[in-house]
Length: 222
Image 1 (cartoon, helix red, strand yellow):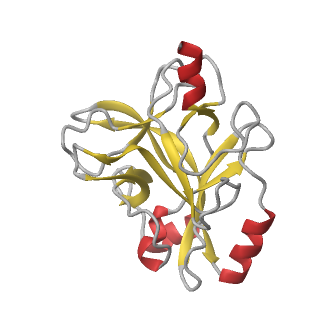
Image 2: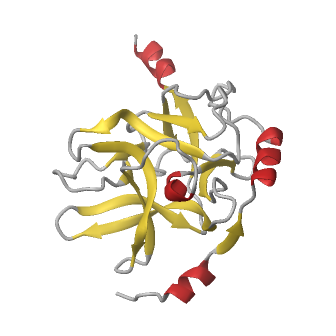
């Protein structure tokens, strides 16, 4: 497999110097993220995150169901579009009760801790994988505590050209840090033991999704 030098990696992404003043202006002006019913997405409330494309677009996001105790756990997209995956909660850095676009978030699967790895189910950007050339999204992050030590734990929800949403990684929780900036897409990862899996990773081609409140699904079933 091809490998990339540190210089090439830095050139592959935008470098961003974050400041506290610009961060708070951004949060104040950000529009709320909406679910498929047009309601504001709320902090700490459970949602399914599913593909905006129906049919061949695949299903929702889930933890690595093939883990067998291997850590960290991968963030996957289920292959069937009828499978909504595992519920997620969102925790904005500003502790607002409403999740806003372009705001740094912790993203956490429910339940918040994994019995497999004995670690958190909060997303983080893993170390660069030279064998695949990817920055994979995994779990095991610390929730909260914004700053240099948690830089890889913060993601954003952005509008995807008026058609659903996309995840991005461009944290602004550290005023003096340099960070990678890119969207989050989905790639096929061929594991010699586990087979092909659709994993989340940094990408110039974002994966587009919509959010469904889990209580809505429960009410429909009932």
